[in-house]
Length: 211
Length: 211
Image (tube, rainbow over all chains, first blue to last red; front, side):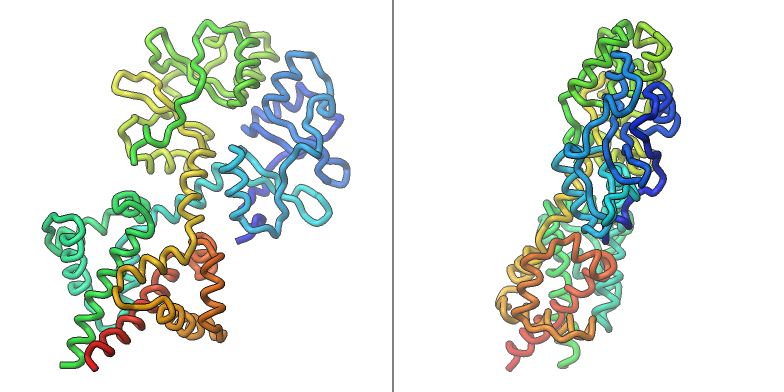
């Protein structure tokens, strides 16, 4: 996934000569704490945050160019860079927004932290039973009941608590991938549990085929 | 994971009678676009964003209570609520910050979208080979070479492109879980591929044991 696939194309360009008071009204209206400042060719030349605006209003600055951060201070991401880079930049620098630029240094979009949260949270919201369905689909000949039965056994071995295949099934129907990772203590452990289930049903399947 | 485990405890409380100009300086200094307004008992009574501040500065308001959003308009999260709820609230409403409250309606922390990005991105940054290590650990008796050899075969079957076990190993050493999910077309597909590898090595292992 590239940066341009994650970016928000709806944003407002500011101009160096825009009026600070007018810009403050626009930012309130579109509810954006940050805006790129561009030249006539839409190339990035500066950056404005609400902090610049409040300071500018207090100190009576008139034009955006008087209060903006200069180009050198702005962290950008190229449209073809991996989206992951935007995630890393946002996480490490606590950015609210990262501007996306093309080869000509034109601003073509903005990647916002809330958009990243939306993207990343989709993964966490996948239901665990979807992974079991994928497993069943992959392991041709294994029934859903065999999977649940093996899972209940593995769960008992891991947690020490007895659980029926039916209760196990009810659990994974509601649980999300995110919850399962937190509950098992991390992706590797969650994954090891699933492999353990796979091992059990495959061994049974191979055993059956040989009888 | 609970909301309180994800929240940032460092934030600034505002008071209804605080001066708008002074608050604007504080928010610039701590670089926060949002702040909770509390009473003497630290209970949440209002909410301030940089948009309220710019409007207040423009219109000459003096006190925070004149410009803040009222309690009824604020979305909060209880300290013991699942952290996942904060993620959903942030993603769905494009929030920058969600205040965390206790049973007494006191603000005890703030969950910021960039903190959520940091948390979620940790999962994406796990290296794929860590999952293979977990698989190898789980499937006692299977060697790393057998895993790589099976993976190269599964990869060829899936993509149609021949790859050596050594090249496959080099790939997973660098690739992250996030990249792998994007490359394979989703968590379920990525997972199905791993199960397929598991199936192959387990079948070989069972076969060996029977010989």
